[in-house]
Image 1 (cartoon, rainbow, N blue to C red):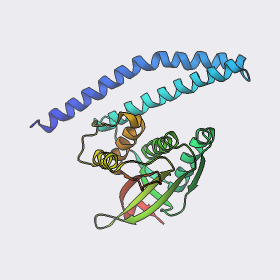
Image 2 (image 1 turned 135 degrees about the vertical axis):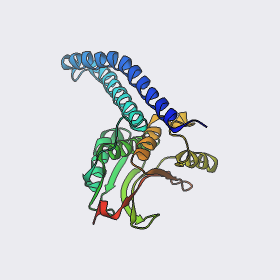
Image 3 (image 1 turned 90 degrees about the vertical axis):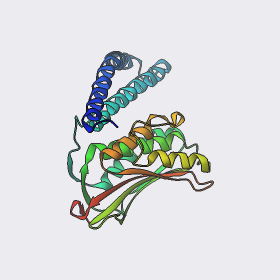
Image 4 (image 1 turned 60 degrees about the horizontal axis):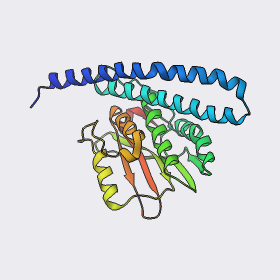
Length: 246
């Protein structure tokens, strides 16, 4: 069995490698974003402008994903530490819905957020909660064809004395999952699984990033898939009562 110090050193080396590779990827992507933004100024309202806009949006999304990967791997390696602060979970839920609204409506999907049901405030890392929510909502938009995507909050009993669980959930109206797929995905969400083990290439990078963000927060992801009723993904945080306000 490897010594803890050796494992930490490998994690730091991996994080440094990812940072180096990402720099080489970001340089040409920044050029694509910069040049396309200039060209779009002269092509607004034209068919060519619409197509170039797709290039611009895709390049920006790729840059954002690269930055997210670097940040989360640095957290895993201990190079970065979560920065807890007081935040308003209802506002974060509404923000996540608003960020995805254009993409959802572009596919003919409705999107509704119910910010009540959780605590008024909680103390945790803002950017990591935003990251996990953004990926869960983006995943819901990707795998839905029609209907309404719903976002909500919940407050539940904790698994240890003096703690409560805060649940951010996203319910999509997609095709759902077969029992075998659901069982495999739930196993991948288990805390005992290695952070980098992700066997679901078809589900994309989003859920893997959301899982890493949840673990950096000391939480986890859960998934439910009622037959014929899409899927409900949850970000669950177990927090001390001192870190919650009604």
